[in-house]
Length: 116
Length: 111
Image 1 (tube, rainbow over the protein chains, first blue to last red):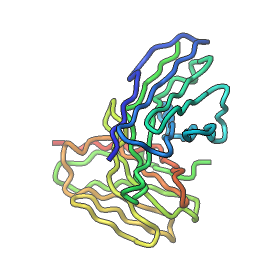
Image 2 (cartoon, each protein chain N blue to C red; image 1 turned 30 degrees about the vertical axis):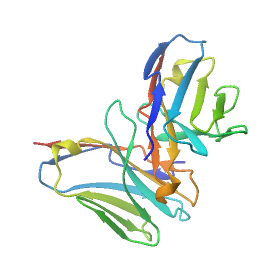
Image 3 (cartoon, rainbow over the protein chains, first blue to last red; image 1 turned 135 degrees about the vertical axis):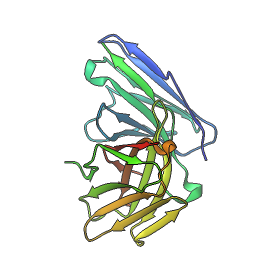
């Protein structure tokens, strides 16, 4: 299994500011995923972070709003830019453990952002 | 359009009884399904999975049933324990890592 650490675990931010969330994995993984869970809603995939190439964004998410870095095989960051109250969510980093061949995703503890 | 639906936002069950959590999907191309459990302030953790070639998978107290014709899967927890109180998400994928999650069902097991 993979152990994933996310920072910060929570933050309160002002409208119009940006915040970067860090995700560290204890093993090398090819793909890392960023999910969002808005209050009362399901986990929604924002983008896939590939090492050595640009992130792949899902419909409804754009790079200008959610820039992602993936400098190596164990680390990624997600920035939430120009925040508004609608961005208040839990943001989760995830990796897939292909070794188990179950398609199981491992998640970090999440970063709870509140935008005032 | 919600491709994976968990229509019951919450469920309360007496300790020792069976908990049944339901999940419906609309995409007949989904071929892999997973259940996750989430405690407050923690990330989701994997519980059990099932491939579309099976109709049942069992792991200890947890059993997942898949009814492809009805596009329905369910998670059975027997016997339910207070530590099972959490939010349960079902997720489905179509042969890729791209999982679609339901909105979750909050299970409360009463002692």
